[in-house]
Length: 177
Image 1: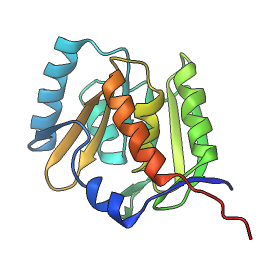
Image 2 (image 1 turned 90 degrees about the vertical axis):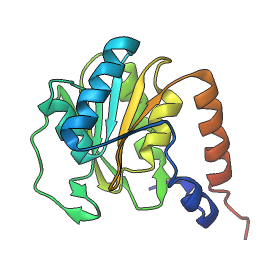
Image 3 (image 1 turned 180 degrees about the vertical axis):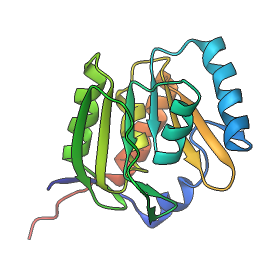
C-alpha cells in the first residue's frame, strides 16, 4: 500500500473548518436546503463522502454519481447500508492518510458514467480532498460536518487550487536513508 499523503497536525486543525458552504440543521433540513442549491446550480455531478450524508441524500432521492463510505459513523462501526451502485470498489485508506489506491479508484470512478460506490477499509474523510481535485467543474462534493450539518463544496478552478495547496502540504515525501 502506497501512502500518497499524510495529515499533519497543523492541517488537522485547519481541515476542521468547512471546505465549502456549511448547511446547518437536522438531516431533513440540510437535505431540503441542499436540494434547493442543487436545483438552482444544476451540478455536473454529486459526490458524497460519508455514510450518513450518503444515506440522507439517497433517502431524499438525490443519487450521487460517486459515493464514498467506510461503514463507520462518528468513528463507530455501523451496519453496512446497501447503497445502490452499478460498480463497487474496495480500497484501503488508513486514518489520517490518502493512499494511491484510493486516489486511483476516485479518478476511475469519476471518468465512468456508472454510479460507483467506493467502500473504504480505514477512513474516508480525507478522500473529499481527492474528490474535489478530480471532480468535473460545477460538481458538488458533499460531506458531513459533525454536530452541525453538511458541507457542500462547489467544484471550481479556485477550489481545486485551494485543495492542491492543502495536498501539497500533505505530500508524503520519502526520505533517503
